[in-house]
Image (cartoon, rainbow, N blue to C red; front, side):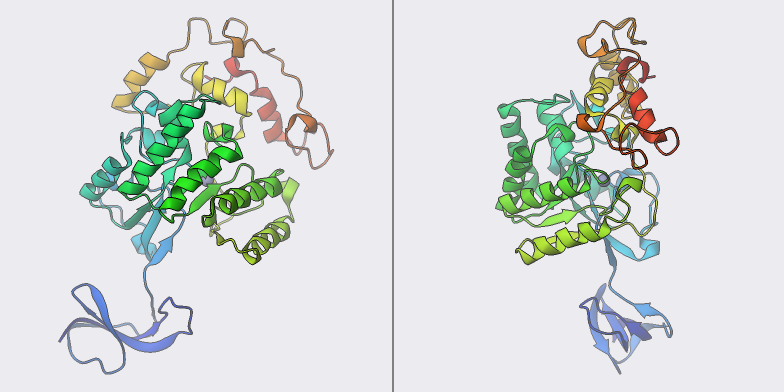
Length: 382
Ligand SMILES: [Zn+2]
């Protein structure tokens, strides 16, 4: 006698074949038979008119700290998701260096673990609602090995590779990058290849939030493909999209590049939001150098400032020098820029206005204009 019988459902078995009408028998929590006339069961549920399918896998989730919330969090289960891949966009909860953990995003900073294995153990002990596969984040590795330095040096890269190897040994499911976020944004392609080569030793994939999803989309995708090809690893393009007016219509180019890479032998896949909006941190729209300055030199305005018990230590160690609340009075080298920054130009690597093909206009470039203003680091970190 079976424990449970789901009777008269429409079964999608997940192997790609057509749906079929069938019963599903379950014993000891596992599917033991699919078909007709499966015998008696202690409990029978009539699922006529309903779909019976394996649990869905959410390939791009940021539920890294969800296991540590006080109450059970079955919100994904209610949507049919039974497995989540977390540690995306270059940020995982470990391995963290206590000296630099305060720079991790606020959503993670309250749960920073000195080793990747410690995070896995804690998440397991907390009793997650879902199965979790955890990527180790490039930003997290960089923070642990070199803090917010743009060029932490070869020893830091060696340290990052060692930490990555420890993480894969502990059970990390792959490497993720978030190249729109500092300090990962400072990495060159060679650094990413070096870390992906470590993942290759475990036959694990490289998932990337690419360096640019808008005006620089084509180059960013080329870089992602190059990293995976040179390292010999599978590639996952995270939240694959052409973002913003400047690249409207670029989806065909994006898909063509992905298809060409697959024809060339690279196992590349992509995931897409099931909705039209997206969310990120404010730091993603800041220019790289001022973004770094905002976090490292200009005080507590970083959007990654942690909350809770860690915040007191963070305030002690990250308090800005006296008088640095404005650009005029700050004496640090990176804060001596003019309070009225020079408008960006396409040649400087800034986005190009889709309307004027040059200097940001007054109508459609509001975000770009905001970026311009924020390049005065001491006046934007309040
Ligand atoms: Zn992302």
